[in-house]
Length: 294
Length: 332
Image 1 (tube, each protein chain N blue to C red):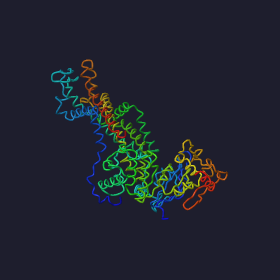
Image 2: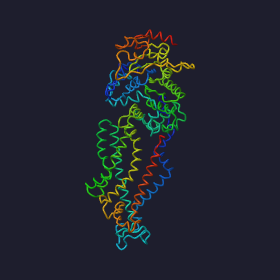
Image 3: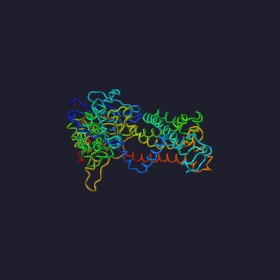
Image 4: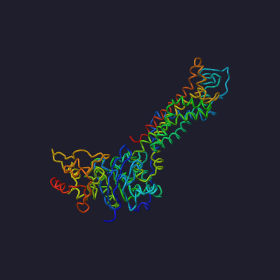
């Protein structure tokens, strides 16, 4: 072998296929996951292009038109208790609802993974200190914790997002910690140490590479939970404030109309259901697509 | 003899993590010359892997107490700071593990793992590192090496994975290769191929190899010299040839007799060493093998036993060398 390497002109090295490309390929063959992704994409696009798509102003209504049934002339999905167009409100509502579903999970994903990986890799009393603190938060039912935090901080979008983030950090940190702890004693980490990798390299390359997958899948499934919790907060008047359209809030205000127009009143719930089940199915597909090691 | 590349002097490793300190390695001294292969054999828990890990300083530092001196290429391994140690690991001494599926990172391709290791130690481009990885794969005779570089560990067979592991270990051209039971997890047919490959690499690259195994057959295949460990001590050390022809320690004799190889006569019973190895947290006085030894007398059960020189480069830690020699004659 000696020195031949440097002179040896590398004949156009074949690029490795890449882990994520493999996952993508497997995911594309998963029909359920693709259908879920398609639904999510539609809803996301509708939310982004709401000003172009929505037929009417979501905030403007005429009381004479209140609680029209689905299929009314000019109001395809009826109107709400203030005579506002339901279709427009659902399209606009997707913006806030998706924001409240995704943002806390993304933030908790970053913070929770960092906490969990540090705790898991450090081990010993550092682990105990961090994880028992996390357990204190974990001990509260998530709904209760979110409501208590939002309630203490006061109603508002920012506070709702913050409290939801706090709710999601413990479960993500626990998953990250348990995966990291298992990895820490694994042979390939020792092999990496034996080949001269420092702690930072090991965490960056070997721990992150192995931990992010499982946490990512788990976090995807949390988006549905986050949306439902966010809707719950809005429902209790702690999240988005009226008259802004948000699915949970709409569900709340339409609840009084359930005997008059049950179908219209159920529409925001249907949206929440569709988005959360799609995220769950996508997470499920991701999980099986990422299982490279039989 | 030229000055040894690896020199272990009076190594002692005590694990202090549990309720009672466990003396895993006790007064082990071993030299390996440049280009020499030495096998360390012994049963599970005899301290052979711990000895090897000590050379890499892989034993948990907070929970173990290490005495003695380890010199590699004239440098004191115990005195290295973190940076020097990182540079030393992989580049001067590299290690291959027992179970390649567990010792390779499952989420990266083998090519990427080799490239990463090379670039950790040497400032070369990705393409140059990849070219060297390809060369290594060909060197360890992985068929269709070019496409195999892009395989994940789980996409390969056991033997192939161990070859890839060897390629990974050799990626920074180490002079000392530490092999921790590299064939134990493999099929019998593949074992021999890997052993022959190791032997060949050792000759071609002038590697010093410390080969840890519990398979005495594998040790004879690869090693120039064999050291037998029992309860944390080296009990006998000799050239491979001397050790099988004329064992001088009853434990070595027992190991040799327990080989299935010699007992292939139908109906013959395989000799086994009675009893179990001692508890390392509670070692008996005297020779640790005495309770299981068919030659032990009262003198063996009290007071330590020093290494006795038997012949040129042959030493054994036993008081009753002549009796063992006689017993070895009786049982050819």
